[in-house]
Structure formats: C-alpha cells, structure tokens
Image (tube, rainbow, N blue to C red; front, side):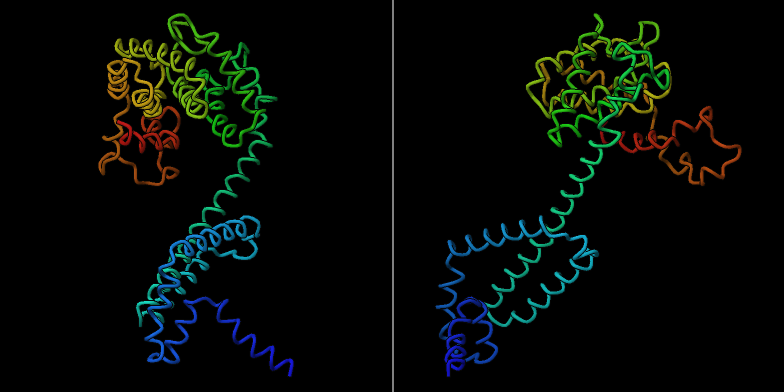
Length: 358
C-alpha cells in the first residue's frame, strides 16, 4: 500500500518538475481537444512570466559555464563537430515535433536557443582554455625565459651588448613584439618587469635626432624599427598609463623616418620595402588614438612607405604570381634570386596584408 501511495504521490509531483511547457506538450499529444481550454492559462503562467524566464535562463547559463569549465571535454566529446551536429539535429527534430501549436512552437524556439547557446559556450570555453594553456606553456618555456639566457635578447646591441644574429638588428624587436601580448595576456609580473627594463633602456638611449636603436648615422636601416613600434603600440594598448612616455618617443622617431623617406634613404636592404605594412599599422593606430596635431606627418609617412615599398598588387596577378612548386623551380631559388623577396614566407604574408592597411 505504501508503494501504491508513493506511486500516486509521484504522479502528482513529477509533472510540476517537468514544467508547464512539458505538461502542455504531453497533453496536446494525448488529449488535444481537452487541452485547448488550458493553453491560455499555461502560456500566461510560463511564457508570459518574464521574471521567471530571465532567472531560469541566467541559472542555466551559469550552470552550463561552470560545467563546461570543469568537465574534461576532450575526453567526453573528442569530436566536437559531431556534438554540434547532434545538437543541430535535435533542434530541428524538436521544431518538427512541436510545431503543431503556438505554445509548443515557443518551446521549440527555446530549445533551439539553448542548443545554440550550448554550442557557443562550449566552443568559447574550449578555445579560451586552449589559449590559456598554450600561453602558460610559452611563459614557462623558452619564450618566457629568453631574456634570462638567450644572448640575442639578454646581450643584444639594443641593450648595450654585442650579440646579434644578423646585421638587421631585429632580434630584440621581435622578442618585444611577441612578449608584450604574452605578458599582459597572462598578467605575468615577471614578464612585465622584463618588458619595462628593456623599454626603459631603449628609450633612455634614444638618439637626439629620434633614432631608436644601436646603429650609427651612416648604417641606419628602418626595418627593425617596425616590429619594435608594434611592440610599443601593444604596450600602450595594454597599459595606457605608459602613453605619456611611449607616444612622444614614437613621434620623435616617426618625424625622423619621415625626413629619411622624403630623401629616399632608410632602406639599406629590401626587408623594409617588403614589410612596410607593419609600420603602417602603427601609424594608423597613432592617427586614430593619439593624433597629437601630427596627422599630416602620419599620412605623408604612410604614403612614402607605400611609395618606396614593394608593389605587392603587381605581384598578385596571374602573369606575375608563381604558381609552380617552389622546390621544383630550376635553378633553385636562393636569397639572391630576384623573386626571393616575394616568395619568402613572412614576406608573402606581408604582401597579403598590404592591401588591407593601405
């Protein structure tokens, strides 16, 4: 008898936990005519209760985020594409089954929204976790310790040392441009301290005419300044309080670069002519964020960089672009080949970027 009473009691309680929406759907399938009089009451209690729905959605979203953060999804769902396909299929099937009435159609919409929300939260959570893991690996690995042991950084000519891997003096600028987003993305005080030490030294030794770097006047090539300026730009973006020192230093160098380009000097090798889009990014950023009554100089410098730079638009044409496998070209392409500036991997990427920044 106790089991019978418990069974009867559960039959009274369970529908309440299923929710008004689930009850409506079941009654419409089993007794469609009897439910017609009840539908307005159900809709008023569930679908028109905005406060209830908002709280329910907030709780579901929070629970979903917490679940996805702590659950090892790489083990539970190794094929995310398959999971998303199942969710989409469920959404479509639910819509087909419930499209026979106004109330069930509303339930279908909620189901679709929740399915889409699950896809979005899942993909974002996995992405953010992966990026965070990769950044910590970099911070704890070589990238986060080059300042400690790598002579091209720790003993760079930019810092009064004697080591460079080439006459371009680009090692330290590359390091700075990469370390700034890593340090501030992780909020790593150790890496931030390294950046501050390097930037302070570089700016303390900025030459009187605005030149940034260890080169003497007769041996100046502006190329390595491009990644350096990108790193300084990112540093101001990450910490605007540093703009009071970094922005004037950038303008001091840009004024000098403008004068050099106006006299067709500054490109001792082809690297700057090929990769000028990087410098235009910094100039555009200054133009938009810190114009400082220097808009004319910024625009003229952009024009000069483009004027003396490689004509990428002329290369990306059916007549000029090399469609063949580069390894099969005879004689082999070397650093002295005429086409080398175009086919070098980093240069090719700069070429793809050129049209977007001009």
